[in-house]
Structures are given as structure tokens and as C-alpha cells.
Length: 219
Image 1 (tube, one colour):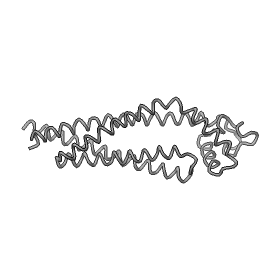
Image 2 (cartoon, rainbow, N blue to C red; image 1 turned 180 degrees about the horizontal axis):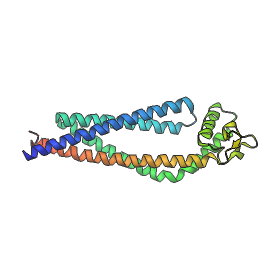
Image 3 (cartoon, one colour; image 1 turned 30 degrees about the horizontal axis):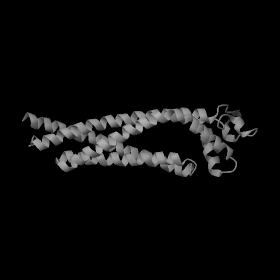
Image 4 (spheres, rainbow, N blue to C red; image 1 turned 120 degrees about the vertical axis):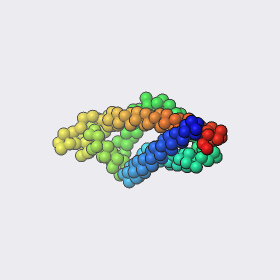
């Protein structure tokens, strides 16, 4: 009786955690789809690495969504095959997420240099490429900055997006974008490790449920 009650508790906890995982997957898919739509409509081919990152988020969301559904179905039906598959896929996903988090941490110091190179290249093409013109005007207007390092990147004729009324933005966009990118990357890294931790808990619950089913404690 005690074992059966313990199994029921584990089963319910596994279902609840996987409902959370399922919802997180939907959230990632929705956020990624919205971001990708915005990038495709406004940034076009200028920022392909950004598009790849967003596509990765959507794919990750789909995987998490499917895992959540698999975990819920396996726990509800007490299907050993589904739960075993769930555990194997969860282990792979946890390892992949931890690896991605470590790579992101190692990549952080390079962000400012890469943004500086990219923006300097875009500023040179400001007057010759319409897509670049749109992107830089949007960045400069929203972040209240001008040029890569400063407004002097444009010589004596900064674009109107470098002004707030008659006041010229003095700070370059490299610094602003670097700060924004690092802030967002920190949030992503935290989310990756939090997800991995929650999935590790799901894995422990799933293994316990599997062992209980094989012992017959679910009767």
C-alpha cells in the first residue's frame, strides 16, 4: 500500500513537471516564431547568424514540446517503452543543453569584438545597401546611438536616425549592442541551466516510476 501510494505521488509529480515542460516548449516555439517573423520582415539577409539562432530556439522548443507530451503520455499510460524512450531522449537533451550553456559562457568575451566588426562593415554599406540602411536606422533609433564607434563614422552627415530632434546621439552602437547582447545572453544561459535542472528532476521521477512499474508497485 505504501509503495503504491509512493508510486502514485511520483506519477502525479512527473505529469505535473511535464505539463510545465510542455508549456515551456510552446512558449519557446511562439517566441521564436515571432522573432523570426520580425527578422525576416525587417532584417532580411543582413543578420543570418541571428536567424540561425532563432531557428535553433524554435527547434529546441519543438523538442521540449514533444518530450513533455511523451513524458505525460508515458506517465499516464504507465507505458514502459514510452518512459524508457523519454528517459533516453531527456539524457541527450540535458547533455546538449549543458554543452550549449558552456559554449555560450566561453563565447561571451568575444561578443563585443564580433559586434564591432559587423557594425563597422554595415556602416560602410549604409548608403549602398537598402537592407543595411533599414537595419542601421532601426538600431540607431531604438538604442539612441550612432554609427559603430560614434557619429564620426558617417563623416559630417549622420543620418536622421542619429538624432532626437536636434540632439545628435554621441554614443556608438557597438557599446549599446554589446551591453544588450550580453544581458540577453546571460538570461539565455540562466534559462538553459534552469531547464536542464528541471529536466534532471523529471528524469529522476521518470526512472523512479519506471522502476516502480517493473516491480509491480503501480498495482
